Image 1 (cartoon, one colour):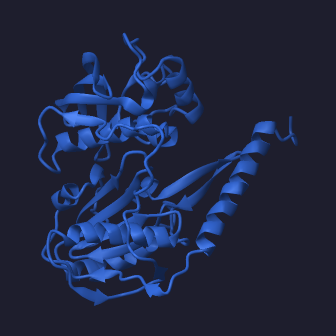
Image 2 (image 1 turned 90 degrees about the horizontal axis):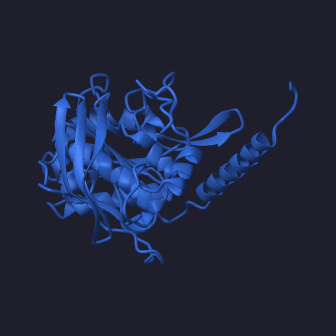
Image 3 (image 1 turned 90 degrees about the vertical axis):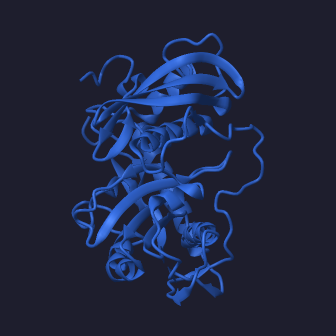
Length: 349
């Protein structure tokens, strides 16, 4: 009825308000006495392979035709068992000078509390869906920036996730520290706002529930940056979300072109009601211990693939030879499986 506000809408509004207050409170305590070192000359031109070698998992490559002077751009994340993943956007240029001259303006546009996150105002639109956090509130969403700071390292501009500017800066500094072990680092200046001493942003106390360390183990290690590596990274991201029971993250690995994308409530129900697979398993694995070993990838076309794998509960084999479908959309690979589409066939193509 017109003029009536449902209990659900009131609840969403209340929760959204609380989250906004929490984010604001986090940002207000972002204080330290040291300046954040933003620009690092680095040591030679880096590729995505160097980032993967220090633990960054890549799941999407963006189209950089509208990002001036950029050679490549990737979405990646770092995850340690029992923690939430920390995400990065990595933009590659021909050299350090090109990264500074062309990349800083666009990094400033996409980071910080005043980041431009809409297709109508962002300087570069491709990948814009990965640069924000959406919080449901009533009939609409609250959109918050995901990357609160950035840094330039060699020929790379990195956007770094954080709930506060300080934690984003720590994430950047942690990644720079990892890359610095591959070669010397020359500091060239730059500052933006205070930061604390660098630390692994994913470090935390050992959880009570032991989450599997390697949710995906390939039969053959793929070549860095290959399409096999991209499919496996998407598979690992979604499996890690199952381990963490992070259904918001899980949904981001579903085909974004589905007319009726799954909701958190639907996915929570499916995993509680049916378990990790819609087809019953002889033994239901624990969500924290669910993992896939001997994973291989088969391509049917440029934008369709399947994976074959053995399901394990920690180190116990549950079923061998299960398959999953994957689809490529705008350069990134996504799940095309039953839970994403909905068991009732609401997203049948």
